[in-house]
Amino acid sequence: MMDNVCSVLVRPAGLQDLENLVLGNAALAWETEQRRLDYSRLRLGVLALLQDHQQKGWYFVAETSSSSAVPVVVGQLLVTFEWSDWRNGNFWWLQSVYVQPAYRRKGVFRQLYGYVMNEARARQETVCGFRLYVEKENVDAHRSYDRLGFHRAPYWMYEYEFSDHTIPSRSQDLSGRPIKGS
Image 1 (tube, rainbow, N blue to C red):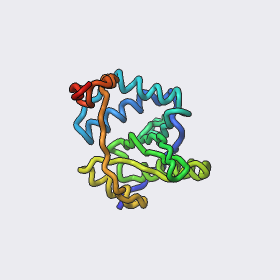
Image 2 (cartoon, rainbow, N blue to C red):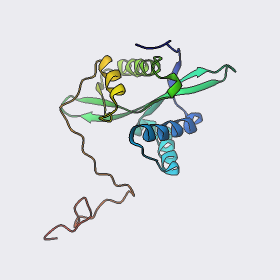
Image 3 (tube, rainbow, N blue to C red):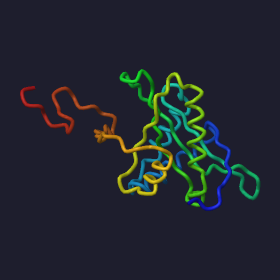
Image 4 (tube, rainbow, N blue to C red):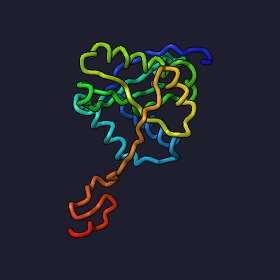
């Protein structure tokens, strides 16, 4: 059950939100994976998306007013998209979901999610569903997504990260080892 619900304004993020989004993503990576992200790379990545949202995706932020009435960003959610030929539509991937600790269990994520759902309804001819991934150990997130009607998909996710943006040559496997016979 949620403690006192916090009313927030959800809106599309803009360049003015860059630093808050970077800080939110860094906190998210640390809290969920104990992973320290390269700040410069992260900042460039968030900036690239904000400058090219039509191709890359959209951030939404939830903001509330502090006692000084200055809006404060307390939550964020990123939507990227993946075309499904099977469904002739886009799945929207909900990513980089982060709510400041003091605002958790107060309905902030639910309001972000509701806003994104309304965005999908407005474009319903192209959106065929939502997907997200969540850390296996993040039981609180599992419960939140269950309450919203998400279910565990029958897929496993695999990843091979080109951390330095270098794709192995044709004569190498994904680990960089030579392929036999090349």
